[in-house]
Length: 190
Image (cartoon, rainbow, N blue to C red):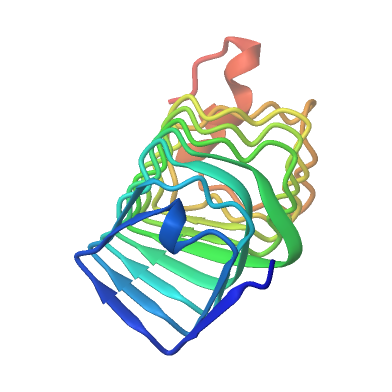
């Protein structure tokens, strides 16, 4: 089946489901206040697209390609990104709700998370090389077997990361964030 190609379109206040996303390629499109909760994203590609105040809460993300995509003020609560296509993979989040999202075993190099709520997010086995976590709440986030070399955590907070279970070479942390690296030692940092 041939995919539909949608170029340079703007979508506002629209509810999407599989009938208007399946087998479609969206390039240079902008989405404002759209609801994607009924989508399963089967064989969908987004290239150079922007999403503003869209709702993806508990959406099933299956075989979606995200290339040069920016999400601003979107809700991704409890979304599993593990099945996203990782060929030419690039997307970023600003002011987004990502609580309970799963990025298990993904290559997220140079991704940006800016001012996001990331409570109980799962990064187990992910490559976070040079990822920017700018002013993000990482309470109960799972960092196990991650590669976070050169990642920047300096303005983020409430994280616990075990340096023995993650690669953190040249990762950046603030003085205030050091307690999150020492939690397993049950020491008090003042």
